[in-house]
Image 1 (cartoon, rainbow, N blue to C red):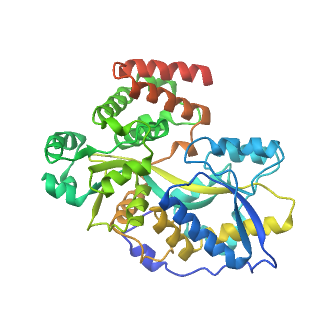
Image 2 (image 1 turned 135 degrees about the vertical axis):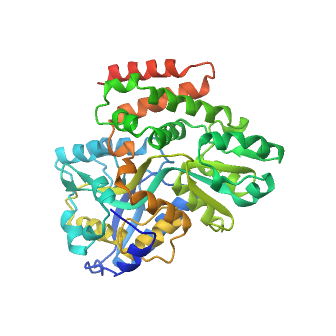
Image 3 (image 1 turned 45 degrees about the vertical axis):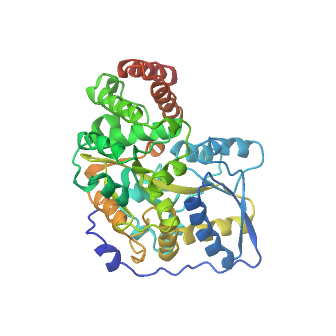
Length: 416
């Protein structure tokens, strides 16, 4: 996929009209998801408002804060006789489980009919496809690991992140930032954030290791690869630069330190931009965004909805309407702007795209740089285990990277 800035969006900005009429009466969709921050709920509201005139009533179902295990229970809810109609998850194994139970919902016909398929970039289409069928509704594409910084803080500290070309450039400027009275690096030390940081750094600097480490069954030789040790050593540097209040701090509270000028920067998924925009901040004026300095690759996240097959014809139709609505060019552009992500269809309007979206699009223009988020490739138990090990490593400053690798090796042997 080759994209030149926003040009391809402008060239393809033809709206695809939704073909599903409004339902005769309000049909309730029970939705299971884990989005609770201001920017996330703002994005959800965009979709709810778009569905309401079509006769769809949104019903929150088992909403739990991000990455706390809510989606792991979807199959259990199905088995217990209380399935959601819609859930948010990208793990392929869940979709295979549902298909094996006769409850999968392929979406190829829906997307082909609406014209969305022709406007999905290859990275999107690959992410929503499991065993040859499109079974996920993509909501936004995001880069796992971008550096967001407060422009006023940078100016007061006398640093220019846009000129950084390596992580060494980053670390050596921190004394200036501290001397100016700011936290250099905002970090939220929760297990899922540490696990996220590990895969973001691995994709940035050791893509070959990433592909082995997050394969459906990891390549066991990865434990002897110097790149794995180097990545874990880099995580240690982040831990050493964390402020004392970092422990168990939610990601959006951490982002707020940068937004309010208490910290210079945060490295996280580019979806944190939604928090900046929700606070009325403008890219290029109030904050800047760059890739991790020196990165040669990037992990790509495609958040997605999935459906549980229903015996109720009205619910089935409502699911179809929701799928088309989510990928409608205008709705998806508005949704992505609120969330802080980039639209998933090439014919989305360009008026809400900013310079941070441009950075994302530049990365997506080169497939050789891209690595899928582990949720789209890795065994779920293995991915959870990597978080437990890196959390142990993070919270024990005496633990060496070699010891962390031995723990990972033990987890591998236990799981596989």
